Length: 292
Image (cartoon, rainbow, N blue to C red; front, side, top):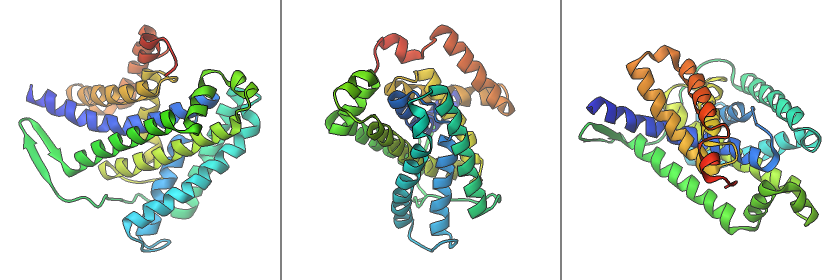
């Protein structure tokens, strides 16, 4: 029983990271009906930029300054990424979704061109603190993930519920045609969702890397779980992305420990198939019955 509690805790921490990645995917899909397959590669590029600014490749900046500068750069990168596929968004959802694969390959190629294909490490500037709460080992990393996830979700809630661009986002998500008739700029809302998704991807990638390593493909591989979280929770539901992320994190941890760790991708696909057979539109999409 102690093992199960510890595994569930670790799965929830991983699930928070999947949730942030899934929220970025869902944001873009809700506003434009485009599944952004470039999300992982763009997040990986963002992590490498922070590495480049702190490891002496570009500069020897302080970690906080490097993150702020990367935020600014990623706003430009996400804007360029959107404008590359913007002409296709209004013509075909399928074509624009396929185009994101090209954007992802460009991002991956840029990463390899700038930083090479070597595996590097990127640690967070966290204190070496840990505490045992019964069967649960809580570390400073765990607390950083929980705090960052809560802050990101809280800020996103305020942004969507309390600002003009957030209200426009909700309107476009509910009815793009009526929103356009009322004078709302769909391109502006699309750009908003791409930029916010890119910033969430940056935050998620910085929290992902300390648990593994950083390469031109590692973050993109990790984002497969985020995609699964979006599918499980429902592509039209932001709360579903959070629920799906935690669910995927916990179930993957339990299956990896009690069955075999080398079949993670198999478990992921089986979980998606089972959930979609029971809830074809995702868990919260079915239960809620409305777009949220």
